[in-house]
Length: 315
Ligand code: FAD
Image 1 (cartoon, helix red, strand yellow):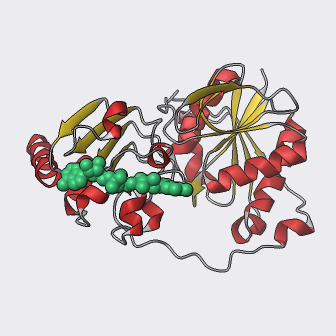
Image 2: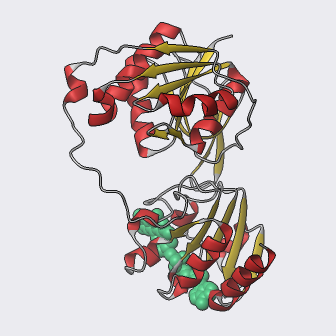
């Protein structure tokens, strides 16, 4: 059975949920092999094994910490070539997609980005044009390189262990060290999950009137991330880093709550693959109701605090 390489998203060995999602998908198509780049593998080993990584390729090199995506693409290409991998899965983040594109060029392969599902034969499903079309696509040349949107699948543990480990030495090119990371500025900690990885997102729009208090309170009661429409961001009510939509982030959570958001196509482009959509809007004619699984016609400043209080009562 061919190995399906999974590029592991992690912070100093703390494995992100997206990596577990990719391992779950990789199991359908072959033997999942984790590619762990950077330091901290010892902390990650058990989790990777528990979610089905039969093998791990580990590359520890200063280039992977100090430089941008090029060294990661080079390391992954070397491993893909030497292992004869059947496919490579990465997460659909800006970094994941850039690595995927560079990797596909190096391998002479095709690349599919923003898949929401991957079948056993590596046929992918994508949702495009703001959800207007569902595309199934398959890479027919070279080693398929596929990026998958976070939250596309629920991670399933196998309870296994990593069977084999391969510490790989990579000879990086000069190009790999041309662009260096000079500073990292972590965003002020909110205590909330990362927007693109959260399984629940509560978003506010122009209907908040600039008061995101009820949106944040509901998000905190649910353990959710907060998102915002562009109208809210352009008004200076919420930072751009939280904008959902065509010119913001793409989210695909299990549950998306749109509060005071009309449902413009550019907003839908960023959230229409959410599994369940709940709408709170005072206008029963708002277009967003057309995509809602559940809807409440009402003023969010009344509805949200009631929902928050009810959730807290049940905790
Ligand atoms: P509105 O459209 O003004 O809707 C506000 C809604 O709130 C209304 O439905 C109203 O009934 C409701 N409401 C008002 N008061 C209350 C209340 N008290 N309680 C409950 N409901 C209330 N938009 C994005 O979101 N993301 C993007 O990435 C994005 N990219 C864009 C890119 C381009 C090139 C362009 C042209 C536009 C883009 N837009 C984007 C903008 C988009 O077209 C809409 O203008 C925007 O999404 C509207 O935001 P909104 O729904 O919050 O505001």
